Length: 323
Image 1: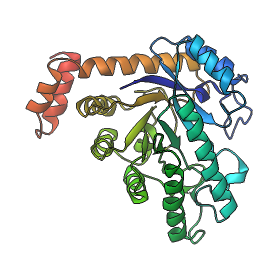
Image 2: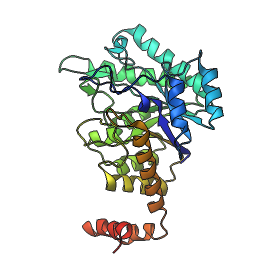
Image 3: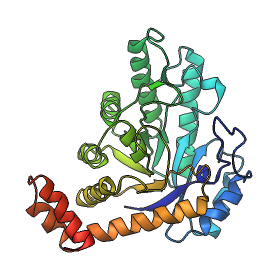
Image 4: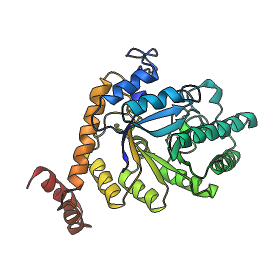
């Protein structure tokens, strides 16, 4: 992989529906970068456009990154966290709203190119529905295909990673699984449309992260990865490996086996936790996972026990914890 990054939202106020003003003091973007710069093992920073970084502050942002030897490793287009998107962005019934979503994506692609970033992410959490009979599903799908195709054609040198999620904010999101995201990417006919795999979202979709990563990589559509963990029923954005130890070990094994060469970002939201400690815990876990799958015997043990049911699990236990 290229390196490990941290999303700046990790150092947000920790707002939620019960404590709307958050659990932590407000830090501006540049204060958040200073926090991230203290983390050993972190190479990059992920932001959203235009809320975090835009044309007006991009120069100052670039200077700060250079000062700390950090790279812009990811960028999301903000099409969710504003009430103007409540009827959707790419699937909004309002053609002017759809046009604005495409225009914002074009601007984000341009800024990404200026920073040498080859991929941006599209999480379309407002594109979906709350109730049956609420939406025209055929029109929504057509608007997704046509709109994302138009966005992608703007710059073939910058890829669009569709970040799927089962729900939230909409009760049911249109792009709700790895398979649906892959189908949409292929339907656009554009090679620079693929997937940003958020491991927590895959768990919410009842997917095995290693399996869906292998499928997306086989189709050359795995562009970026968000690392976090949850209890499977909500997008908790907990430190990596908090819950799903074995699933993460298998994921890192397959990413190595399939030569994944993109970035990974910590996508954490530590409401009541210390964000520095949440990041350090995640960084330590990722490092250990990479060490384990690099063991000279690891490949042989996996292959020798393939298709042997629970024996394959015990082989991993014996390697990791000792016989």
